[in-house]
Amino acid sequence: MKQPEQHRAATGPLRLLLVEDSADDAVLLVQTLRRAGYEVTDRRVDTPEEMRTELEQGPWDLVLADYFMPRFSGLAALEILREKGLDLPFIIVSGRVGEDAAVEAMKAGAHDYVMKDHLKRLVPAVERELREAQVRRDRNLERRRAEEALKAERRRFHDVLELLPAGVMLVAPDYSVLFANRFFRERFGELNGKRCFESLFNRDRPCDECETGRVQRAPTPMEWKATGADGCTYHFFHFPFTDSDGATLTLSMGVDITERELAEAELRRHREHLEELVKQRTEELEARNTRLANEIADREHAEEALRDRENQLRALNETLEHRVTERTAEVESQAEQLRALAVDLSRAEQQERKRLAQVLHDHIQQLLVAARLHTEALKSEVADGRAVRLAQSIQSILTEAIEASRTLAVELSPPVLHQAGLIAGLEWLADRLLEQSRFRVEVQFDNGPEPAAEEVRLLLFECVRELLLNAIKHSGQSQAAVTVGHTQDKRIKITVADAGEGFDPSLLNARSRKTTTFGLFSIQQRLTHLGGSMQIETTPGRGVLVTLSAPLGG
Image (cartoon, rainbow, N blue to C red):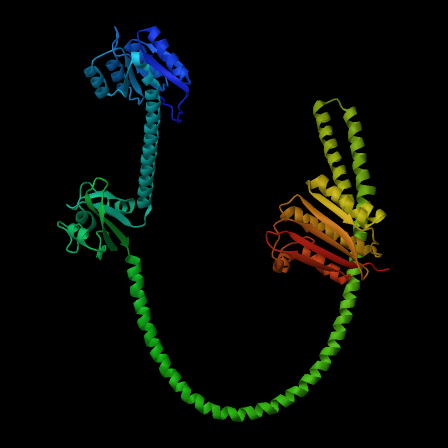
């Protein structure tokens, strides 16, 4: 049976169950409560069966019952309420009865007794009993919550004890084990009524070190070491413990220190060995000190010889410096040649890209288109359904091949890059990445000049494309920004930024050796050979900002 739990004001909605055989008296009671401000919803019963039915269909806030009725009585109604286990305010409202009847009703559990010819007491009595009923419900709710919290805490404590990597048990004064955790049971088996010394040590009497009564009197926990029936060495701790019913118990904990004991023994052996080694080493050092004193005298003579050698080395160093200068000039010359080779390599790569794109466009695509046309014609010439389906499948494959070759031709050598320049190429690349990878690239530029050398423009385009592909693969983001600007020393500057995961810049060279793609390392080297540079600003988790710089030339 559900009961209301909200606190009720002095007036307001009121669900009233009337145990009354007189309809007129029932109306009078309801009107009295309504005049006091209550919004009364009521039901009237005058038999036990009707009352039981209404209580089950509740909930109710208040029960008003007549004391005497032809087929029922207030005391019988009170007994039914008690049977249902409901804590509802129960007020008897009746005609004149003796004082003994009123006392009997109050002893039976009625909360108040109001005479029908004295109804001015009804409203204060109702208000008081509703308040007290709410207080009782609040207290019961708090008690239930506290009990549930205590049960949950006990369950958690039990779970903790079960998971402890040590044996835990509760021992009664007669040495019977009332509780043993999983560690204890796994090591020593189920209790089966055994006492602690029987389970732990296979003894027939208590241990000499243990006396349960002594644990209660000791100011600090008792502890001792012993070897259990499983052959392991344990460090036992005994604590006085009072159960919830006031019983005096002993909480015992056994920690397996077998490995620690073995380690300590091994440590002692090592310490003794170390002391012996130190002793031997000390004797050796004393002997060496004697030899060292003799060697010092010899060293003074050697130092004189070293000074002579230093003069010779100084002269040799001057000769080497001259040779290093000459070698540096040769290296610089070779570096210049390497830069020229890089330019030639970049130019050759772009020419090869153009050639491959041209071959794809002018030859392979034409062949594929012709093959598709022939397949189209073949499909109209044959009547066999299987052959037609095969021709359709071949035609679909050829269509995909044509589209793939067109895409490859454009990506190998984008026409817009050669026809409209670097900025137009970057805008085309942004549209391409948005279409293919749903990756948005914002391109900003200052309308300044582009590098005069085509190989520089092409390399910068390849650099930006490689960096954006890197961002798509590794940044975890769906957008990046490309900004094109110029510096006062007549250089073009391009920044590529994303807000992705970033990386450790010190790993750049190591990472580049593990990949066969264009790679950041390759970008850096090729730009350097063409007089450009690349700077990376990144930390793990904070994105990447790459700045490319190259001469405008011309």
